[in-house]
Length: 206
Image (cartoon, rainbow, N blue to C red; front, side):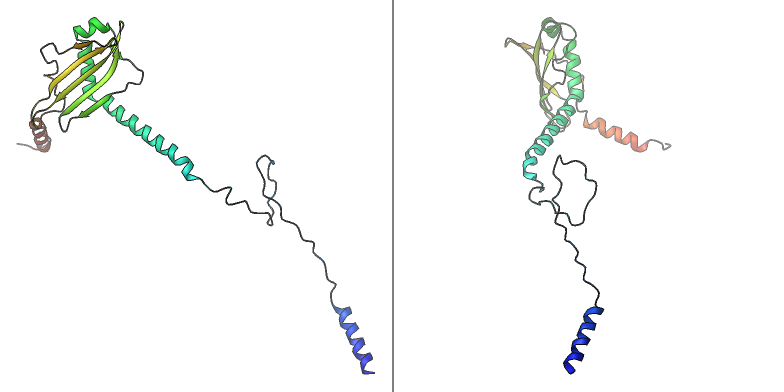
């Protein structure tokens, strides 16, 4: 009798439980690959991309970056020398030199469209030694200009101003007199002190 009652209660408990629903599992979807087309939806159960395949290889692009920085630095320093008054003064004197005009001809200018100014322009320490290619209506050549300042308050003295021809000849353009003697390349320190005194007292009544 007792076993029948227990069996009935067990049947009632089983009949009162809600039916179990089987939820189908979705498999993982692979990450999209190049050329698969547009991604219309992003499922939350998609597979993650491979970390090793998408890692940034900085050591591959570092040499290219350093080469670009070096080229830009060289171009900036060359432009600084190109825009220096020393180059403008030597080019002006070259156009008015009879020896240079006899060899180069008229319309003397830089040979290259982007001229390269080789050498050093150090006005602070009194050292100038430059060279660049020039051309005219007749021929082209390499102009050299060198000047130094013996003392800190002295004037620049030209030691070389020459023109090297395409066939290797050397043309001295100084011809005894220094055409740059009246040009103050770096300025005199006494004049700078005088200009500072004038600017300091400017606007005040005497």
